[in-house]
Each structure stands twice: as structure tokens, then as C-alpha cells.
Image (tube, rainbow, N blue to C red):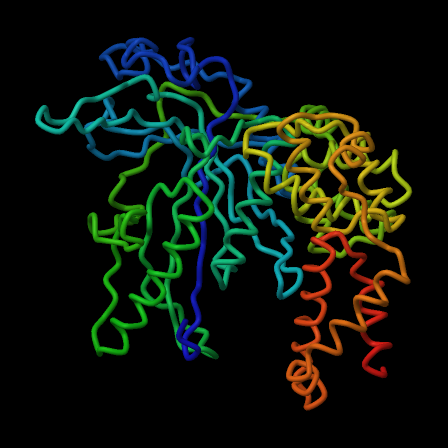
Length: 473
């Protein structure tokens, strides 16, 4: 990353809403059906067909707005956004322009650099387009099943300054949408995808650079890679004395590079105008309060609770609440152990690593709680906990029986470990000399030899204590 420049990023996130039927007709929104089996004259744009708004779409959008600290408009409308593209049968998309449903919100995110608030400009409802399927040797086919699937578009302020912040924002936003139940957020199915608007400028400058937009990124990893590549590309263009072109670009996961798709349109190019077939959307204060009462405990509330109750850091608590099912699992285990902080660390490391994104934890909360107790009591070290958990993920069983059968219990015999420490120190003159000359990392080599002698079962804290005694510290 070039240290003389900074990136300025705003994200446009599209989330398909979890309704049973589409936004303006009764067709199913179920994913994976045979092409063109879930469409009708309304969603395929047949002449004379009339849209009827699905009111659950409005309720879900308002809930998303309330959960992201937005102001909910008492009066908003739907507009036609005109552009011609093969997957848009009507040649316009029903969306919202100057009067969105939700506006002026924000999210707080945690990164290694600390906490940051990122503004949300607006959340508006719109319909999804169809899908083009490119078949080699046969041309391009169109599947209209996705036409009319309800979306909310969540537009952030250009407050993001790194790929890490962008990822944290997306993860937090996804968590909120899942907690509220308005979207399933399955990025692999396209129900959550992101457009990245990025520009660069000299550090210390207030002037925004020319931005590019990278379309339809559907994984956190792709977002990070696309941002890092595009930042370096734009810096290289500027340092070569050329001008960055405002355009829409495509990210190729195979190469890790972005490439030009088309020149970027402005609002004027879309010729927005109010849809004459749809009445305004009016939200009363009573309706707003009713929907607010349906919103469950959100990630930030859980995060604050975990920090206060269990002494977790802000970053650890943030990571824990990003997936509701994982947070639920942790809470169940935390009530059963004397060492909830150890349980939290195990959940954030091994449990999160081993659990598929859309999967559930196959280990009973009581079994995780028992592992936390054994670790806290000094009977299991961290590497052994990981090994036991990997076995429990394959076949959940009583941890005590597994540990007894597999010989996993930690070696904490002080006399035995002291004898080993004497031998290690006596046979490690060069390592000891390096350590005494100021190379503090050399001490870990001594610890490593002890762990090797105990086949990974030694008590790490006791090993370090005994080694330091042997070398005279």
C-alpha cells in the first residue's frame, strides 16, 4: 500500500429480502428453481401488466432502517430508473430516487485500529433484475426468475478508509440483517452483494479523487482483494501523470485484478420519474413503533453485555456477535462454565474456524463448557483443546471420556517438568547465549523443545516458569 495516498470508499450493498413472494406480484422468490418457472406478466414487463406493492417489503425495509439508526420517512415514493439491459425486461427498474424510505443512519465497527462510526446515507427498496447465463458455444440465455425479487439498497457515506474497515462494515451490516430476519444474506446465492465506490487522494487533502465502481462482489475476501488492487492501480495511474477515469469495473477473482466494463452513469442518465402505477408509501408513527417493537436484541447490545459481563475486548466481543447462531451458542455454553472467557476464546478461534458459514455447531454447548473448565483448571492446554474440539466436530461425545481414552490430559507434574527443563537448558548453549544477548525470541525455542519432549501435553505456563528458574531469572 502506498503510504502517500489514502483511499476513500463508499459501499452500496444490495440485500434480497426474505419474503415468500416478489415485490410487485405473487411469484415465488425461492432460490434454485428451473429457469423461467417463477415469473409472470408483471415481473417480465408485459404490456398492460400492473404492479401491486408487497407490504411486507416495506416492513422489512423499515426494520433494516431502524436497526441501522436511520430516520424513517413518513412519506416516500417509488420511481422508475430507466436503462436498457437484456436482464431488465421492462427496460426500467422500479426503485426510489429523491425520497428514500430510510436515511441518515450509521453503524459502529471494530478493527485492529479501534472503533469507528460509518454513516449510512440511505436505504431504499427496489426490484432485482433477471440473470444472464453465458453458455459457451450457445450464446447468452436469460433467466427471469430473479426479476422482481425485492431488494433493499444500503448506501454508506464515503467514510471507509481501508479494506479492513470495509470488511468490518459489511460483516456488521450482514449480522444486523440476519438478527432482524429481513434477509438470509447468502452471499453464495447472490442475496447479499456489494458495489465498491473507491477513489484515492493525497494524504491530508480534503479534495475527493475520481471514483470507480466495482460491481457485484459477493464475498468478504473478494471485497478486500478488489479494494487493495484498485487502490494500487489508481495510485499508479496518478503517479504516471494520467487521470483516473470514472467508470464501472469488474473484479476477476481468478486474477485478483479489476478491468473496465463501461463508463459510469450519473443520475441524469437514468431519467428517473415517479412510477405512475404506484401510490406513495406512508409510514405512520404508530406503524414505526410497532415495527421497532419487533426488532430483537442487536449485535451492539450483545457486544456491550459481553464486554461488561465477561471482560471481553471490544474486538473479541464484536467478532463473537457477528453470527447470531454463534453468539447464541456461546451464551448457552457461558452459563455452564466457570471460565466463560476461555469459552469465548475457543468460540472465536476454533468454533468459528470449523463451523461453515451457513452451518450450525455440532458440539453441545455443555461439552464446550467442560473443555473451558478443564483448560481453566490447567488440565488441558490450548493445543490439546483444539485437538479435542476437532474430534468433537466429527463425532460429538463426552469430553472427559474422550480425553481419558486419548491420553490428552495436560502434563503438570512439576518434578518431571523441572527435570526436563534442566536437560533442555544444559543442551542448548547457543540458544541460551542468543537469549542472554537480547534475542528474546530464543526463549520460545526452549519452550518448543519442552513441548516436543512432552508430546505437546506440557503445561505452557509451568514450563515457562521452570525454564526461567533454570536460566536464573
